[in-house]
Image 1 (cartoon, rainbow, N blue to C red):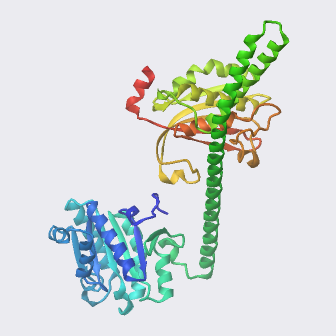
Image 2 (spheres, rainbow, N blue to C red):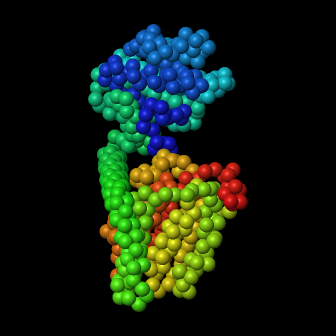
Image 3 (tube, rainbow, N blue to C red):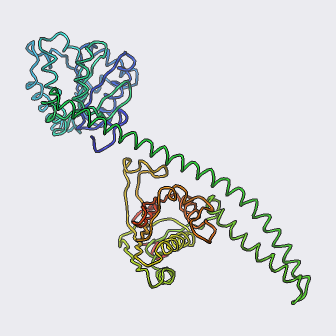
Length: 476
């Protein structure tokens, strides 16, 4: 499969080989207009081999989208050829001659200063060419490898109403990318040229079927995981909104209780039982206020005081406290990236997140173990964000907290960030939910890897704000 995900016409790149299977004129016009226009916009030389459509028809497609066709033709940025000038030159199809022609045109395009060669051909000529279908299959088989080796993007067009289904099935097997209607699909029915020789032998056909079954199963499992993660993310967001709203209203009630209790306390002298009762009310209200603060953090309703920070400095300033929290039985290891990017965050909130994570890690290692706190820079590509609803491409600073403790099962992992969920005998069950809310409010997210008996690793991603501003963060 392609190293870069291909989902739209705009995702096609030099080195790709695709087939376009269309069934009506609107589809053909839509895809070919975008395909040609995007090549011109990217500085590529575009060659269009016409057969069932005339060059003037395709030119009118482009003119309707305000493409200056005449200018591109004059400057040889856009070239129209016919099947008799290319595929059926001298009246017969010669795959070797066509491959040599593509290589020559690609070299010429680069020599002329173009970014590369983008070519597309209408293949309806193959219906009436003696032996054309068999030779065409051979040609298409070699084209994928040729496109990768040269600066060429090739799209071969097939009118689905003009060819037999069994022929189209062969065409499907030899193209790594397929355009169906206006959708670009990575083709898991694709059979690499090296494997195609034996494709029609029973053993080979059986192997391909098994491989396709496994690919489809993995795809379905990936989709199901993504759907489950999305549902969980939406549930957490909904719970956060409710918790934040309730906490906001509850805070007003707690404030009124505390003010009344303070007035009541002042009414009675020291030693009076009623004064002690008022102090108990104040103490309970104070604990309620702390609970409200945690709920507001989970619901992303806290007022932040962000500034540029060096996360290494934040971790380093807490090192002695972390050692006291973990105790003598746990080995604390800090692995901090020297050239770490800066983040924009509320330092006290990040300190709270780190302390919450470390406390959880310590309790997961009652007999001791190792706790590793690591920082590094990461750049995420679109394909790396799949399966994590909050993730997005870009540059991030990552804080990892890994322990060698008892680990967690799937049932715990699914609920661990929910407020008031806990596996401990005591505690509020808000530590991780608070961390979750704080990181989300900072525009980041948390991932967790854990298995029973194999420890747990939390990874916190925060948007990087540029290495050029790191020195300012360290100075501040």
